[in-house]
Length: 90
Image 1 (cartoon, rainbow, N blue to C red):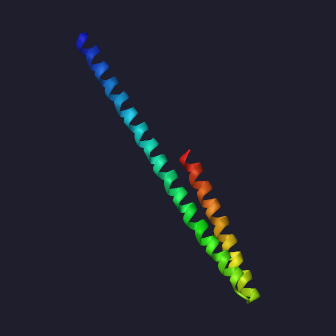
Image 2 (tube, helix red, strand yellow):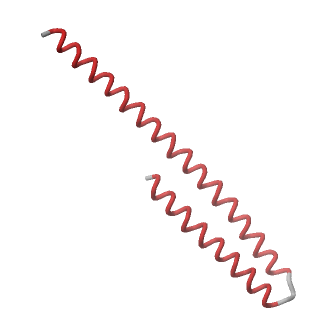
């Protein structure tokens, strides 16, 4: 009877350690995922800023309009991508 109790306790302790390890792995994954999304967002905000700057420097109106629209598209797409990623990491 004592052997069965010891076996059950050992099995439960092992299961608890595995569960704790899994939680730490998931937390680390969330942190890495959020860091990636932060970097992605910052990088594409820079791209959109560059596009806006280029749009303002041209004297050709239709080019300015197209490049400005591209900058807005870049920002909107980045916002959607980052929001979806953050939602998945919750």
